[in-house]
Amino acid sequence: MAATNKPFLILQSIGKTFASGVTALDRVNLTVNDGDFMSLLGPSGCGKSTALRIIAGLSQPTSGVVDWRGPPLEQNDIGFVFQEPTLLPWASVYDNVWLPLRLRGVSRKEAGPQIAEVLERVHLTGFETAVPRELSGGMKMRVSIARGLVTRPRMLLMDEPFAALDEITRFKLNNDLLELWQERRFTVIFVTHSVFESVFLSNRITVMAAHPGRVFEELNVEAPYPRDAAFRTSAHYAELCRNTSQTLSRAMGVEAADVVH
Amino acid sequence: MSSIETAKPIVIDAEEARRERGRRLERTGRWLLPLIIMAAAIIFWDRICVWNGIPQYILPRPGVVLNTLIEDAGLLFSSLLVTLRITLLSLALAVAGGVGLSVLFTQSRWIEMSLFPFAIVLQVTPIVAIFPLINIYVDDQTTKLLLCAWIVAFFPILSNTTLGLNSVDRNLIDYFRLNGASRWQTLWHLRLPAAMPYFLGGLKIAGGLALIGAVVAEFVAGTAGQSSGLASRIIEAGYRLNAPRLFAALILISLTGIVIFLTLSWISHLVLHRWHESALKQEQ
Image (tube, rainbow over all chains, first blue to last red; front, side):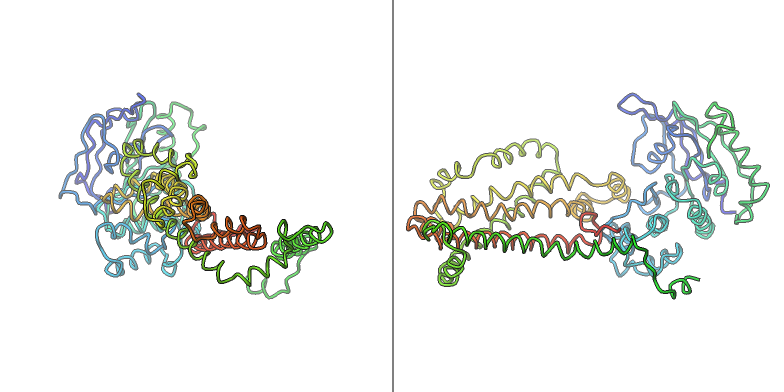
């Protein structure tokens, strides 16, 4: 298993109140260990995405501290994958993946080997010259993931990246993401509202509650990696999903039967 | 499995066959119909002249206009070149000015708020009303005409490009921020390409307006006998009751406008056809 017990990132009493007066996050404390695959799971409006944006530095907390541990963070160290593929529609797959390197002054040619490698890892070799509209939803998401990984970040932040995909595509991407994570040992924070997805992917799940957004409970997913199709159909997986569902329904203050994944 | 399926002869049901016939008809009709209507209109024009015995100095027959176009080709085309030069130069300046100003606007909301009213004032004031002033302040004939045509043409480029530069996907802007992109990088790699469809839309309008601006400016200048463009040929022909030449010049201006429009549409298609919705063929 890739996770360690060395803290990588600690959120200390993070609060976020918008100008409209809405409190998105209320005293959120969270520790992410080096190599963790942590899911932030919760209903809409629980501040998952806001927390992710604060970690990325795209938004400033109203109160509290984001404390990075370990070696000082560099520009390359955070990769971000949005809910939508968020690609440049006019640029080819190759140029889209080149973008983060290009912004750091790496020439198209120099970036070649890195781009080829990461495209191969997400099974997009041969699609270098295609533009996004020529690709399916799942393939666009793969490009987005490749773009997130091409700088070899130490942390990958993912904001409901597979929410808009069909289930078959989502399962495939789940498997590929896990493989990549085990191979490259980066830390992942994965925002989702799917119990099944969070259990399949993560070693830790932070269940959040809404109004105001806060941490409700932290769960460890006690199942070894690698996880594959057999794990998805196992009784153990079903059991873990049930437990997580129950925690989530308590967080939402409703009956378990009403919780949709 | 799929190879077996495709090996079968393709059978099209009656409804699909009908739809295919309809599509084919529409494809030819799109070209043929306007041509037929145009030809019919010209024949009708000719017949009206003959039936009513209208004299040539009032309404010349189409054949006479065509003859004039050929006979006066030297004179008319050298005038066309003068008008075309003003049109294209002013269009180029409108692109530079419009894009430059809109980039400036997106750098700061304050600049936009301060300067946009001036752009609107320039746009809404009729050019014929401004020209006498320009005539007083500017000596050089070409500069005068250029300035006029520019004032008319630059606004659609400015307003469209500003809209485009501001219509960038918020997530992509965040992505650029996350990657430490400079203002210049965000402009060059994100905002400008994203604004391209809007800019090209503005360019198509500006192309036509530049021609109108050039002709109107020549008209106003031409009354003072200072111009040698197509507009002055029209005025001259009007004074001399030379209707055939007037019509010939008019047709040349229209054709020029059409060529400008088609060229700009073609450029727009070349730039956008791979990625932008507006340039994609609808799949049926």
